[in-house]
Every structure is written in structure tokens, then in C-alpha cells.
Image 1 (tube, rainbow, N blue to C red):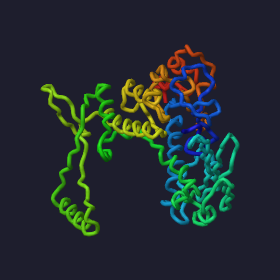
Image 2 (cartoon, one colour):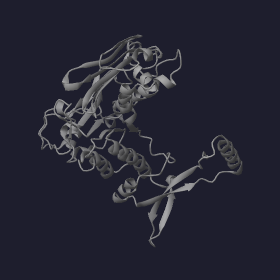
Image 3 (cartoon, rainbow, N blue to C red):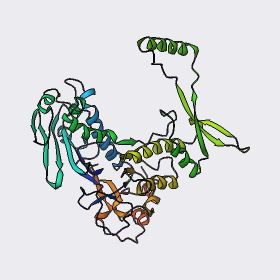
Image 4 (tube, rainbow, N blue to C red):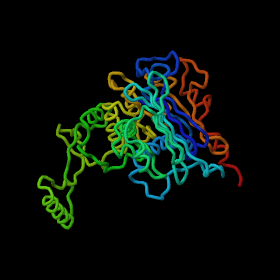
Length: 415
């Protein structure tokens, strides 16, 4: 369970910014909250929705989460000896490219709050730390300052040996998991469980694996897409490609008799025809919204099954408002979300602000200052009432996070 996420010096995020999933003391509806004894308020939010003008930094916040995850998962295995750290610092201030980028996160594993973070320059991870808070008291698991490490008594395992194996451009957490550190592998798995959907996820030909979950098909049917089923269809390949495939299969069978090269296939979605038969359409014949929903819903049901975090950038891209509301309600409904999964979504769809399942502390905003730096803040920083029309208030500019100027008034201006 995610409690908070912080980042600084990443893309348009110059100064330290923080996003919190801890429920506030607002007297809004609380039936969708997730009980969490490790949270200061005793409960956390199932979803947070972020609004802001174009280029205000919404996607950069989602990217920061994805960047932190990627560094944890791959810095040890994919980093090159003597290579760089794949970071993207704030570039609109001459001093910031030379400063470190910082990522830190608070999350809960087995009821215990953990705080993990690191700072990175272009060439190395300057610092890294992990603390646990059993019974609310901080316990140091490890701290890193450049190439120096300090391990707490609560961290068992081959700590010093693993410290000798890492490079300046790899994280200790990444190296520990790759070397079978049982205790730190639990923390590593938290990052692995995080999934995301980017705005361009509507492209046809997404990897299908076993095919769509039956719940995805049912969901698509209930919101009016016309989809009633699916099938896998083997892709017809040219003869020269099939010949190569047969040669690969023969080679694999010699190495391992039970190993057979899989045949490439695709997914087709079924629609009910006028004569009550099923007609199958390839994904490139489906609408962009249907294709995107396939991806979002696949990730959503996986997160719900595992009690994991899902990040969706531009939830409204190619989707009708009702579809976006339905996705949010999956996470905000205790019946659909018994394991405490969470959704972090960016959007421009202001209709979602009036969704009855959303509390005011679930709405966050991004806006840029005059020097291009992003600020992230919650609606709870602004005085509102439970009865307010939040959508109207936002569109009227009461909460900020809207474009600075009216471009229409300048269209007729003389050059």
C-alpha cells in the first residue's frame, strides 16, 4: 500500500514535491477508504486523481514514479560498468542539471510502514536509505553515502558481501534482490508489483499473453462497446518466415524435447451481429477507446487481484467520461477492491470531479510557475465545502492549475 511519494529535480519538477495517499480528516464519505494502521489517520485512499493544464507536469509526476521503479528493478542488471544513471533533471535552471535528483517513497508491507529513497547524479547514486517503522519507531535497515554503507541490526543477510558487488550506478536494493537477499527482496517485489499505463497504450497489437480476462470482456460489454467475447487467431506468416520458425522449433526440441517454439497469434474481439451470431474483429478495427480500455482494464483487474498500485497517465485519453468513472469506481468500491489496490491517475476530464465515490482529498493539482517548475498540491490546501460543485469551481479558476492566459484574445493581434 502506498502512503506517499516524493520527488525533486526530475523533468519539470524542480523543487521537492510530494503526493500523499493518506486520508485526511475531512468528513466526506469514508466507505471506500482502505483501513491501514500504519497510516497516521488509520486509513488510506484507494485512488488519487491529478488535474492540471497541458504541460503542467501531471505526466512528469507519473513518469517520476515509473523512473524510480525502473531504477530499482534494473539498475543492477542493465546498468553498464562505468556507465551513467538514466535520470532527467530540471533543465530550465542552469544549476539543477549538476544537482542530484531525489526519489523517496513510503509504503506498507505486512502492516509495517517502510520508507525508501535515493539521490542520483549523472554518474552515480549519491545516497540510498531504507527504514522500517514497526510499532511506529524508526528502525534503520541500511544507509548508503556514496560507496559507504551502514547496516542496521534489523537487516540480516550477506549485507557487506552484496555491498562489494554493486557499481556506483546501481542501487543496493537492486543488487540485493538480484543476489537473493530474502528480506530486501520483499521490498523489491513491492516495486515490481507497480504497473502503469501510458497515454499511447491504445495502439493495436498489444501483447495478449493468455488473452483478455473474462472480467474485462464483461466490463466492455456493460459499458456499451458491443464486445461479447474474444478469440486467439494464429498470425499467417510468409513461407520464408515459417521455414525459419520450423528450424528454430527443431533446434529447441533437440535441446529440450518438451520445449516447442510458440506460434505467433493475435486477439480478435467478438461482436453480436443482427442474426445473433458472433463476428470477430481484429484490434486495428476496434475504436481507440476500446483498445485502450483493454489495456487499462487488464492492468486494473491484475492490480485488484494483487492489492497493487496502478498508475494511469491521461485516464481520459480516448475514453468516454462514463468509462473513466467506471474504472475509478472499481478501486473506490470495497466490494470490487477487497485487497486494497490503489489507482494513481492523471486526467483532464473534469466530470470525474463530481463522482460521488471520490472524496475531496482524492483530488490533486499540478501547475507551473513563471520559470517552468511544477508545483503539486491537494484540493485540501484550499477551503472548500462538501456541497461545493468542484468541477465548476475548478473551471472558474478557484483552485488554480488552469492555463495562465486566454489565447483566443490574442489571435487577432497585429504582429
